[in-house]
Image 1 (cartoon, rainbow, N blue to C red):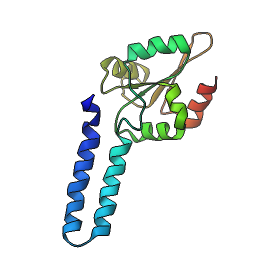
Image 2 (image 1 turned 120 degrees about the horizontal axis):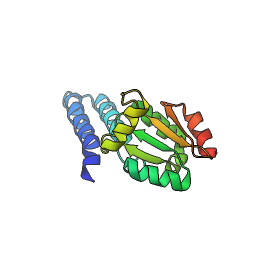
Image 3 (image 1 turned 90 degrees about the vertical axis):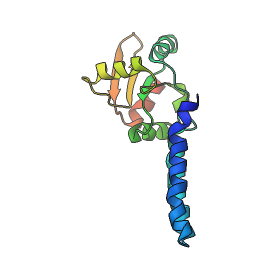
Image 4 (image 1 turned 60 degrees about the vertical axis):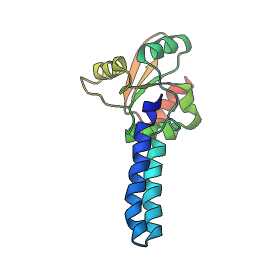
Amino acid sequence: MMRVWTLPTLLALCGALAAAGPASKGSPVTAAVVLLFFLALAAMNSPLIFPGSIGAQEAERRAEADGRPIVFWRPGCTYCMRLRLRLGRSAHRMHWVNIWHDPAGAAAVRAANNGNETVPTVVVLGTNGERSTLTNPPPSEVKKALER
């Protein structure tokens, strides 16, 4: 559980260190802007933004049961952040798999993307059991898949 906070904590500490320079030189506005920038990066990479991540096998099992899409993502990915933020509350209706924490998830992404770990990769189950894979899809396309 604590590992998910490593990157956000490091970003916040780096921001504090980076802001210390301008603050010591008498430029509090610059220091505040630098600190706020790093804190925003820390927040975007924290578990506060992304729903709880589960393993690929558990996501497959749940998707078979409820028909919800699976999103393979990784921390720090700007495209994943864009998708998560644009989906808003709808993001909690999907199963999120962090490929850095789940080797099976990383393998599934590589299998779907010709050996590349391109994220976000969204797997949508159709009504008659067919699967479609969307690599770095526009948020509007994922919202349509959620409506089905």
